[in-house]
Length: 240
Image 1 (tube, one colour):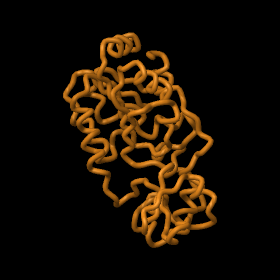
Image 2 (cartoon, rainbow, N blue to C red):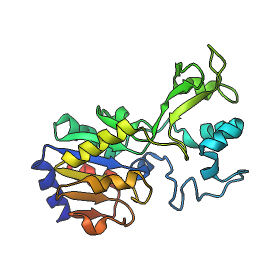
Image 3 (cartoon, one colour):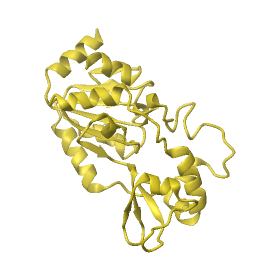
Image 4 (cartoon, rainbow, N blue to C red):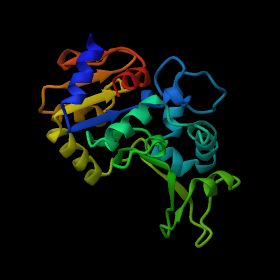
Protein backbone atom coordinates (compact mmCIF):
# COMPACT_ATOMS: atom_id res chain seq x y z
CA UNK A 1 0.00 0.00 0.00
CA UNK A 2 2.82 2.39 0.91
CA UNK A 3 4.46 1.64 -2.44
CA UNK A 4 1.27 2.69 -4.24
CA UNK A 5 1.15 5.88 -2.18
CA UNK A 6 4.77 6.66 -3.05
CA UNK A 7 4.05 6.03 -6.74
CA UNK A 8 1.19 8.55 -6.55
CA UNK A 9 3.34 11.15 -4.76
CA UNK A 10 6.07 10.83 -7.40
CA UNK A 11 3.59 10.86 -10.27
CA UNK A 12 1.98 14.07 -9.00
CA UNK A 13 5.19 16.00 -8.33
CA UNK A 14 7.68 17.79 -10.58
CA UNK A 15 9.82 19.15 -7.77
CA UNK A 16 11.46 16.21 -6.00
CA UNK A 17 14.81 16.41 -4.22
CA UNK A 18 16.77 13.36 -3.12
CA UNK A 19 19.19 13.39 -0.18
CA UNK A 20 21.30 10.26 0.25
CA UNK A 21 24.06 8.71 2.33
CA UNK A 22 26.35 5.69 2.35
CA UNK A 23 23.43 3.22 2.27
CA UNK A 24 22.74 4.22 -1.35
CA UNK A 25 26.09 2.74 -2.40
CA UNK A 26 26.17 -0.39 -0.23
CA UNK A 27 24.08 -2.12 -2.91
CA UNK A 28 26.99 -1.44 -5.27
CA UNK A 29 29.22 -3.35 -2.81
CA UNK A 30 30.79 -0.21 -1.34
CA UNK A 31 30.83 -0.61 2.46
CA UNK A 32 29.23 2.08 4.62
CA UNK A 33 30.83 3.34 7.81
CA UNK A 34 28.76 2.42 10.85
CA UNK A 35 26.82 -0.77 10.08
CA UNK A 36 27.96 -4.21 11.25
CA UNK A 37 30.00 -4.65 8.06
CA UNK A 38 31.04 -0.99 7.83
CA UNK A 39 34.53 0.46 7.55
CA UNK A 40 34.51 1.59 11.19
CA UNK A 41 33.29 -1.69 12.66
CA UNK A 42 35.12 -4.32 10.59
CA UNK A 43 38.09 -5.66 12.53
CA UNK A 44 41.36 -5.14 10.67
CA UNK A 45 45.03 -5.02 11.57
CA UNK A 46 45.21 -1.24 11.21
CA UNK A 47 47.60 0.67 13.47
CA UNK A 48 45.07 3.47 13.89
CA UNK A 49 41.25 3.64 13.96
CA UNK A 50 39.71 4.57 10.56
CA UNK A 51 38.06 7.70 12.03
CA UNK A 52 41.51 8.96 13.02
CA UNK A 53 43.08 8.10 9.65
CA UNK A 54 40.37 10.05 7.82
CA UNK A 55 41.02 13.25 9.77
CA UNK A 56 42.79 16.36 8.50
CA UNK A 57 45.40 16.34 11.26
CA UNK A 58 46.28 12.68 10.62
CA UNK A 59 46.56 13.32 6.87
CA UNK A 60 49.00 16.19 7.50
CA UNK A 61 51.07 14.24 10.05
CA UNK A 62 51.04 10.77 8.43
CA UNK A 63 50.38 11.12 4.68
CA UNK A 64 51.89 7.67 3.93
CA UNK A 65 49.51 5.89 6.32
CA UNK A 66 46.60 8.00 5.10
CA UNK A 67 47.13 7.14 1.43
CA UNK A 68 47.75 3.48 2.20
CA UNK A 69 44.31 3.31 3.87
CA UNK A 70 42.61 5.63 1.38
CA UNK A 71 43.73 3.75 -1.74
CA UNK A 72 42.91 0.32 -0.29
CA UNK A 73 39.72 0.99 1.67
CA UNK A 74 38.03 4.08 0.22
CA UNK A 75 38.33 3.58 -3.55
CA UNK A 76 36.03 1.15 -5.39
CA UNK A 77 36.81 1.77 -9.05
CA UNK A 78 34.93 -1.31 -10.25
CA UNK A 79 31.67 -0.34 -8.49
CA UNK A 80 28.68 0.12 -10.79
CA UNK A 81 25.51 2.16 -10.25
CA UNK A 82 22.70 0.14 -8.66
CA UNK A 83 18.91 0.32 -9.04
CA UNK A 84 18.70 3.37 -6.75
CA UNK A 85 21.19 5.42 -8.80
CA UNK A 86 19.48 4.37 -12.05
CA UNK A 87 15.97 5.20 -10.79
CA UNK A 88 17.06 8.66 -9.61
CA UNK A 89 18.73 9.42 -12.95
CA UNK A 90 15.50 8.38 -14.68
CA UNK A 91 13.42 10.68 -12.45
CA UNK A 92 15.70 13.57 -13.36
CA UNK A 93 15.42 12.69 -17.06
CA UNK A 94 11.63 12.86 -16.74
CA UNK A 95 11.93 16.37 -15.27
CA UNK A 96 10.65 15.31 -11.85
CA UNK A 97 13.85 15.25 -9.78
CA UNK A 98 15.54 18.64 -9.41
CA UNK A 99 18.69 17.62 -7.50
CA UNK A 100 20.56 14.74 -5.90
CA UNK A 101 22.31 15.79 -2.71
CA UNK A 102 24.78 13.13 -1.65
CA UNK A 103 27.21 12.47 1.17
CA UNK A 104 28.97 9.86 -1.01
CA UNK A 105 32.28 10.42 -2.78
CA UNK A 106 32.06 7.55 -5.29
CA UNK A 107 30.64 9.32 -8.36
CA UNK A 108 28.01 6.61 -8.96
CA UNK A 109 25.12 9.06 -9.38
CA UNK A 110 26.90 10.71 -12.31
CA UNK A 111 27.83 7.30 -13.73
CA UNK A 112 24.11 6.41 -13.73
CA UNK A 113 23.31 9.58 -15.68
CA UNK A 114 22.32 12.12 -13.00
CA UNK A 115 23.35 15.64 -14.04
CA UNK A 116 22.60 17.86 -11.04
CA UNK A 117 24.52 16.17 -8.22
CA UNK A 118 25.64 18.12 -5.17
CA UNK A 119 28.52 16.19 -3.59
CA UNK A 120 28.66 17.49 -0.02
CA UNK A 121 31.77 15.49 0.85
CA UNK A 122 33.58 15.83 -2.48
CA UNK A 123 34.66 13.13 -4.92
CA UNK A 124 37.49 10.60 -5.26
CA UNK A 125 37.56 11.47 -8.97
CA UNK A 126 38.81 15.01 -8.26
CA UNK A 127 42.30 15.52 -6.86
CA UNK A 128 44.52 18.58 -6.65
CA UNK A 129 48.03 19.68 -5.70
CA UNK A 130 48.03 21.37 -2.30
CA UNK A 131 50.78 23.73 -3.48
CA UNK A 132 49.97 24.86 -7.03
CA UNK A 133 46.36 23.53 -7.24
CA UNK A 134 46.90 21.61 -10.49
CA UNK A 135 44.11 19.05 -10.98
CA UNK A 136 44.67 15.29 -11.28
CA UNK A 137 42.41 12.34 -12.00
CA UNK A 138 41.90 9.27 -9.84
CA UNK A 139 44.25 7.08 -11.88
CA UNK A 140 47.14 9.45 -11.22
CA UNK A 141 46.64 9.04 -7.47
CA UNK A 142 46.14 5.27 -7.62
CA UNK A 143 49.13 4.59 -9.85
CA UNK A 144 51.53 6.78 -7.87
CA UNK A 145 53.69 4.74 -5.49
CA UNK A 146 53.26 6.05 -1.96
CA UNK A 147 52.17 9.66 -1.39
CA UNK A 148 51.12 11.16 -4.76
CA UNK A 149 53.19 14.18 -5.78
CA UNK A 150 52.48 16.88 -8.33
CA UNK A 151 54.37 16.47 -11.63
CA UNK A 152 54.69 20.26 -11.83
CA UNK A 153 55.82 21.43 -8.37
CA UNK A 154 56.21 18.22 -6.30
CA UNK A 155 53.48 19.28 -3.86
CA UNK A 156 51.29 16.59 -2.29
CA UNK A 157 48.26 15.71 -4.43
CA UNK A 158 45.24 15.23 -2.17
CA UNK A 159 41.73 14.00 -2.92
CA UNK A 160 39.04 16.67 -3.11
CA UNK A 161 37.10 15.03 -0.27
CA UNK A 162 36.08 16.45 3.08
CA UNK A 163 38.06 14.87 5.91
CA UNK A 164 37.14 14.99 9.60
CA UNK A 165 38.02 18.40 11.10
CA UNK A 166 37.44 20.06 7.71
CA UNK A 167 34.41 22.19 6.91
CA UNK A 168 31.94 21.56 4.11
CA UNK A 169 31.90 23.84 1.08
CA UNK A 170 29.52 26.55 2.30
CA UNK A 171 28.33 27.61 -1.17
CA UNK A 172 27.45 23.98 -1.95
CA UNK A 173 25.69 23.64 1.41
CA UNK A 174 23.65 26.79 0.71
CA UNK A 175 22.58 25.38 -2.67
CA UNK A 176 21.55 22.12 -0.99
CA UNK A 177 19.50 24.05 1.60
CA UNK A 178 17.79 26.02 -1.19
CA UNK A 179 16.81 22.90 -3.11
CA UNK A 180 15.43 21.28 0.06
CA UNK A 181 13.53 24.41 1.14
CA UNK A 182 11.86 24.67 -2.27
CA UNK A 183 11.15 20.96 -2.73
CA UNK A 184 7.62 19.64 -2.96
CA UNK A 185 8.81 16.10 -2.13
CA UNK A 186 11.98 15.22 -0.19
CA UNK A 187 13.17 11.62 -0.45
CA UNK A 188 15.90 10.72 2.05
CA UNK A 189 17.65 7.39 1.55
CA UNK A 190 20.52 5.33 2.86
CA UNK A 191 21.42 7.57 5.77
CA UNK A 192 20.91 7.18 9.50
CA UNK A 193 20.49 10.98 9.81
CA UNK A 194 22.70 11.12 12.88
CA UNK A 195 25.86 12.75 11.45
CA UNK A 196 25.85 16.54 11.33
CA UNK A 197 25.92 18.94 9.59
CA UNK A 198 24.46 16.84 6.77
CA UNK A 199 21.67 15.33 8.93
CA UNK A 200 20.48 18.82 9.83
CA UNK A 201 19.55 19.48 6.18
CA UNK A 202 16.22 17.70 6.71
CA UNK A 203 15.27 20.53 9.10
CA UNK A 204 15.07 22.90 6.13
CA UNK A 205 12.32 20.95 4.39
CA UNK A 206 9.05 22.90 4.53
CA UNK A 207 6.79 20.53 2.62
CA UNK A 208 4.55 17.71 3.82
CA UNK A 209 5.85 14.82 1.73
CA UNK A 210 8.96 13.53 3.49
CA UNK A 211 9.88 9.99 2.38
CA UNK A 212 12.49 8.03 4.37
CA UNK A 213 14.08 4.87 2.97
CA UNK A 214 16.70 3.29 5.21
CA UNK A 215 17.47 -0.23 6.48
CA UNK A 216 17.25 0.98 10.10
CA UNK A 217 15.12 3.58 11.86
CA UNK A 218 16.15 7.24 11.92
CA UNK A 219 15.47 10.10 14.36
CA UNK A 220 13.20 11.66 11.71
CA UNK A 221 10.86 8.69 11.17
CA UNK A 222 8.12 10.33 13.26
CA UNK A 223 8.05 13.29 10.83
CA UNK A 224 7.89 11.24 7.64
CA UNK A 225 4.85 10.82 5.41
CA UNK A 226 6.16 7.36 4.46
CA UNK A 227 8.99 5.26 5.89
CA UNK A 228 10.51 2.15 4.33
CA UNK A 229 12.98 0.05 6.34
CA UNK A 230 14.12 -1.72 3.22
CA UNK A 231 16.58 -1.72 0.31
CA UNK A 232 16.56 1.69 -1.35
CA UNK A 233 17.28 0.16 -4.77
CA UNK A 234 14.34 -2.21 -4.44
CA UNK A 235 11.90 0.55 -3.38
CA UNK A 236 12.93 3.08 -6.02
CA UNK A 237 12.96 0.47 -8.78
CA UNK A 238 9.36 -0.42 -7.91
CA UNK A 239 8.10 3.13 -8.02
CA UNK A 240 10.10 4.41 -11.01
